Amino acid sequence: MSRPGRANDPEQTKRDIIDVATEEFASKGLAGARIDEIAAKTRTSKRMIYYYFGSKERLYVAVLEEAYRSIRHVELDLEADHRLEQLPPERALAELTRFTFDSHVENPAFVRLVCNENLHYGRFVQQSARIQALNLPAIDTILRIVERGRHDGTFRSDVDPVDLHMTISALCFYNVSNQYTFSVIFKADMASPGALAARRESVVRTVVASVKPRTA
Figure 1 (cartoon, helix red, strand yellow):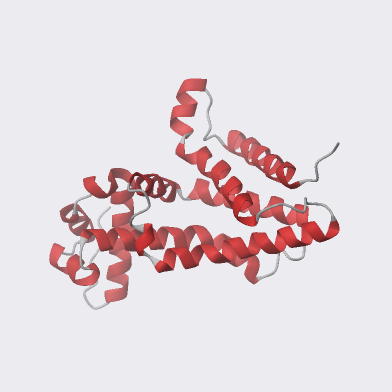
Figure 2 (cartoon, helix red, strand yellow):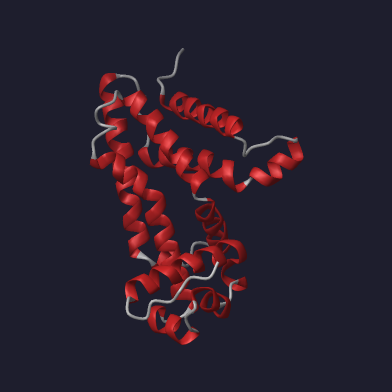
């Protein structure tokens, strides 16, 4: 969909470029996306895109930064109004997992961008200090939940917050990244509301079970 240019509003123009570039990079990757196409869809020019972002690669980094910012806002919002801190550790972890699951489902472009960036071995993520900083609050949120769970005995003492974050991310990510191949191979509709609700609770049970004390 074409978006009208806003020559008198540089910030809005940059946001429009990033919105369209997100669609292009997510569907075609860095190599396949074309600045000409992005310019046409934003009713701007290649010269203007290069003026704002410097190069195709730097525009791609800006797209990655915005994608990570969007996906992390759920954890930040939850932390800001202390909803998680008001819940017992097990319920807080379950809620965080549900929000993470929903956030991935609602942002499939983020999943595709991360898949593409892994084909580049994380080279462009490495160029952005902002992306690395955006992920720190997510770890801090999990750390606080883990510490409370350790303290009251509902979680094991050896739970690692980064490893737990990886487990949550992996389970939520796979549901989106592999939905088409999984659906075809196993003849399962992974995108229906019922399937998503059931899968979300399965992920929650798996995550919560992974931190519980081991029984003899």
